[in-house]
Structure formats: structure tokens, C-alpha cells
Image 1 (cartoon, rainbow, N blue to C red):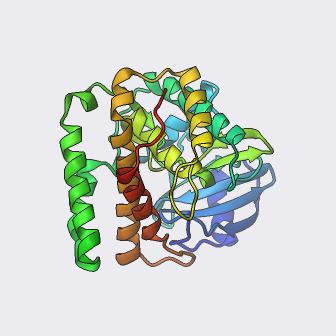
Image 2: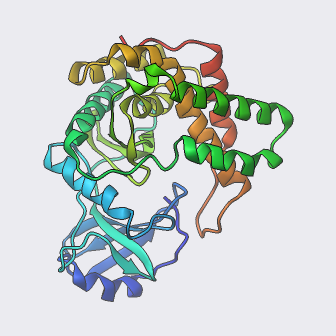
Length: 318
């Protein structure tokens, strides 16, 4: 979350009359994150999150917002999108698509313990199963095709050793994606960005997943790998904490058992999850967009994770 498009309370006061939320009372920009403009919005009816989408189009957004509605209807803890008086979930604000969703209780757990990892693993499995009958289709927009497109854009900015690693890993993932094991992996809607700051807890009680705007259809295992690469590591080194890994994977497996193909693909998928975020952070660092409140994330964090996953096998799925 960031603020690329400034919005004032006066701007929102007239716009919000189309929603059943009463008057807008307070608006506060959210500084974390790097994709969209986000604000905490307080109205006469409660607290919400207003998002102005900087990259996604009006045509693309129904996939994300209707997915959240679909999951919520099936008991997955996610924010509820608010429809306007015409039943629309996306409307224009300052000429850009915007939406309002309910604000989750609690706060992000930035120092997760095994109990938190287990709760995330169980809810992630529940989310994957709940999305099986979701009718809309959209690929993961930060998948292999995006890696191919983006790699040449960042190569001129990085030293030779990093460039060699990046090109070699993209080639490795391209080869892996063409193999039979990969083709046997189960697929469906995935969150694809389930970091610590995109999950809310009240103590040890998980209250919800949010920020679904990198979601798409991909392998479920990729979603698990992205999640493990953030929730179950030492942040300074990228080394996996086996106790937390085990807690997350066992809780997931109890809800949606892993397959034999997923077991064989696990190490490669952990590398794919690290590559995706290393590459996006390189891009955001060297090719930044202007924003009022934006600090690019350190690309070196996911470079360390990728090198660690290449060097050392992770605990198995089961």
C-alpha cells in the first residue's frame, strides 16, 4: 500500500454518497506497500479501506473483488467489498478505478510464532479449496511471462554476479514449468502475496487475509511457497525456521493434503517464490514510480532468500 494519487476528505465526501456508508468523517493515507493508493476511511457506519488502483484496469478488477466476495461467502476470512447503489464494486475516483472494502479487526503479526503460522496454513488451504468453483479466470500477472519481460529491464542496473543469478534462475524456472511434474500440480485462484503484513490477528486468532490485488490463477503450491518464504524465516538471513515451516505445512496438509507431485516440486517452487519477489523489488528499486508515501523494499532480502533456497533443501511437505 502507498499513496500515488492524493485524495482529500472533500474529494471523498461527494463520491461516497453512492455507497450505503453515511458521511465520510476521516481519511488517512497508508504508507506501507508499493502498488496502489490506499487509505483508512472512517464513515458514520464504521471503518473501511479505500483503494485507488494504479495499474489494474476497470476490466481486470472484477476478478479480484468478486473473488473476495466468493471466498467470504464460503467462510474464508477476507474483507468484504462494498457495492454502490448500482451494485458496482468498482467506480471511478479521480479518473481511476476505486473500491471500498471492510476493515479487518486486529493487527499484523510481524513476529510470528508456530501458532500463527499454523493458523495461516489452515486458512490458506481453506481458501484454495473455496476457490475451486470460482468462475472467473485470470493468470498470475507476475508469473513466468512477466519474469521474461522484466528481467531485461533490470539487468543494466545490477552487477554481473547478480545478473548471472537472475538469468540462470529464470532459465531454471522456465525449464521446470515445462516438465511433467509441474503440469501435475493443482491450480486455482491464489493470493500470491500472503506476507505477514497482509494477514490480521487478534492475539493468536486469525481475523483475515487482505490485499488480494496480486491474486490470479496459478499453482496452489506457489502460493504456499510465497507464504513460507515470509512467515517461516529469519528476516536477516532468509534461513527457514523449521518449527514454523512444519507448523504451517502440517496445518495446511490437514485441511488440503499435498500431492506426490507437489512434494517433488516443493524445492523448485520455493525458489520460484523467491525469484518473483526479488525481481519485482529490483524493478521497483531501479525503475520506481512517483508516490507521496513510498519507500522501495530492499531487493537484497529476496536475493538472500533465493540463494539460501538454492543452497539448502527446505523441510519437505510431509
